[in-house]
Structures are given as structure tokens and as C-alpha cells.
Image (cartoon, rainbow, N blue to C red; front, side, top):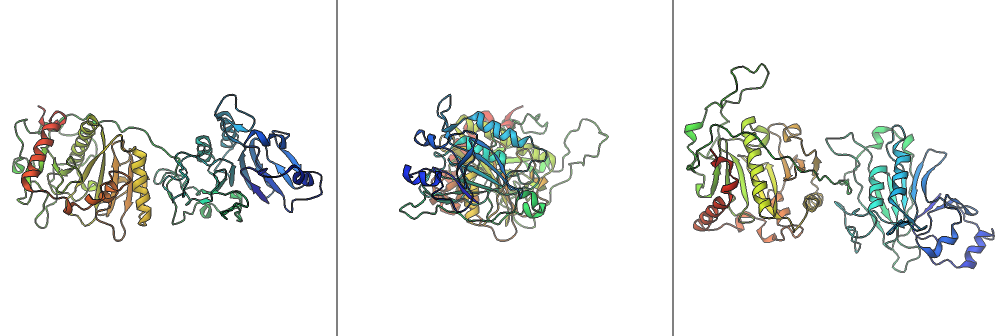
Length: 501
């Protein structure tokens, strides 16, 4: 079987085609083609619903599904995306795509199709992937085809029209840790037949129909699999509205007297709640040696502290990536987020909500990351990025792409999930969180680059400050650090819940 995408009647002369149409010449194997992509070739396709054009050459039709006797299922969509209404005969519309999707998605136990044929590339197919060369996948191609591919979940998707060969890394069709594992999709774009640059225009492969495969074999994930390029999570995480603690410091106090609060129980609504919630009054574990981040420790550089709550504090990062690069830290000694008690975690959430509001007021969004590896005290790094510099999708793409380059499996997890649901205490991990609530997670099983989070943010793809990737190269003198802390404290004051009565 030969499947053709793109312009089947590219430079064919009428005389040459007449030989096939009259039977003087014959295609050596059954050949299936898509319809016209322009007005000039419409006359070659007499029946919009599909027909035999010549012996062994079949026009599949405007849209539909071809099912082989082996069970192989091929979905197809002819033409280019319509730029006007009504759609020209050589174009498809949103209605065409919706009807094709409905015809398949309404099938009981639908898992996907074996092959999808379209002439245009899907828009954004290069997201999270290997480079498509000179083709800008954010600008070329069809959004409707992207929507179709995301819904039909083809095992192979073939396209053309961009005069380039591109074999994308396979991508997932499920959300890791949220959905049942599914098969991957391989996208292959082919160049023009006989092109002078000798770009690949033929792709030979064998395929066992999905319906005949062992389910476990079908959903195996190759090592180079990437995130789905079409999935966009746009929901904003809700702001925390938790009530203020009765133990918060009065507005006039800045430095925290740890001895005054350590071991003090949080006021409760009653002596007994009648449920199995554990008490949170126990002290956090104590460090085995000097700790630079326990607030009671003499090693803490207190001139960098900008806000102090009951259980957590906020400090400027030493050698920060930017002047407003801050850390959220627990006052007591906790190694990671998954070790935090519920009341400490509640205050971490308050600080995240306050920082989101603060940075958004300045036209920025924050990126937060934690590396629970070769670290002793929890440090939540919070770095603002200008809203007009990049989108949240750009940030996720930068992290995932640079992770793949270093063979780091960075998985997207549900935005309302807790890290404790995917990592046990003592588990080494790295995770990124956007102020939209979107999260990326990596379980560290071997060596891990200590500056990875910072390197991604400093890269040309985001802040374009690669010279600031290492904090040791960015350290300032103590008077300058103190001045920056005072400036941040003053600007943050209207958003600082710890200063309210």
C-alpha cells in the first residue's frame, strides 16, 4: 500500500496523467491519495466523497476513515485550512474537523487511529521536540489539524506542503500520573517528490493494527518520548484565602524570635475534632550540623530577610538571578516540601499567593522550583519573569526541552496535585511550579545538575542572561545586598500578610 499526502498532481502533465487514466500505465501497488490543495487541481477529483481515479489509484475523499481488512484504521482530511467562509472546495473547515472527530470519538472504547493523513502540518508540532530546521512550527501549519491530531491520537501522522522532511520525536497521548498510559504518536512530514535538495520524500514502515496488538505492548513508552505538543493547560490556580494565624507577628516586628514560638501549639477550634487528623505541634527535625537557613542559626544572613511569618520566612537569594529573586524558607529545619507539616505548608501557600499578586502588579509572573538533592534545608526558589517576555507555555517548553537535552525526564503533573502525592519523604526530586499552578516533576535517580533550574531560566529561551546561571558569579557586597533587601521589603509591604493585624 502507498499513501500519498500533499499535492499528488504537482507537476504532472495532462498527457502523462491520461496514460494512467486510460490504463496505458498502471500504478504498481494500491495507491491512496488526498484531495486538492488548490483551485488548479480540483478538476482531477470528480467526486468529493472519494473515487477511483485510475487503476490502483484511489482518491480517499474530503474526510473520513479508511478501514483495511486487517483492521488497520486510517483517518484522512483533504485540503488546506479554509481562510474564509464558505470554505472553498479545496479547503476544510472547523465543521469538517468536528464531524470527523465525532464519527470516531463516538465509537465505543475508542483509543485512537493507526494513521492520520493530512496535507498541512499541525501548528505547534515542534513544541517540546527536536528542531524542525528552517520551519517555524509556531507559525506554519493548521490549528485545526493540531486539534484533530490531539483528539484522534494517531500512532503515525503524515503531512507535507512545507517542502521539508521532519521526523518528530514521539509524543505522549496521556497526562503522566493523571491518566492511564496510552500509545505514543510519531509525526512525519515529507518533502516534495524528486526535490533537488534530495530531502526525504518516501517513508517505508510496517505496522500492526492497534486492534491486533497486545495492550501492554501498545502503550510502551520509548526513551525519547516527549510531552504532547498540543496540550495547553490555561487554568489559573485559585488564590489562597486561608485565615491569618493568631500567632503572626505584629507589624512593627521584623526579626523573628524563634525561641518565643518554637513548640507552641496552634490554636484549635476544639479539643477534639472527631477525625483522624494528626497533630501538628511536634517540632521539626533538628539539623545535624550548622544550617545556613534555619532562622535561629547564627549562620543565617539576616540582612537578606524581607518578611517573616509564623512558620516561614522570605529572603532575597544570595547572588540572585535578578534583584527580586527570592526564597521561601521554613523557619524550622525541614529538608523538602514533602516533609512539611500542614500548618507550615499552609503558610508556604500564603507566601506563593502574595508573591503572585506582587509580581503580577509589576507585569511579571513567577517561576518556582525546588531541588531536593544534595541540600539540607528546603529552599523554594522564586524567580519573576516579565509577562511580555514569554508565556507560561514558553517556560514549560524551555524546561522540558533543556531537560530532554540532558536526558532528564521532566513530567507534567496535575496542577492541583500535591507533590507529596508523587514523592515520599526522603525521595530526591526536582520540581517546577508556575504561578498558574502548572507543575513539572523529575524523580532524581542518579546525578543531577545542581544549577539546572537556574540555568534554564537564565538561558536565551527565557531571561537571556546565561552569564548569571551560577549564583557564585553574581554575589554582591553586603551593603548592596542590604539595600536591595530594604527596597524589596518596602515594595512588598502592601502584599505581606505577615504585617497585618
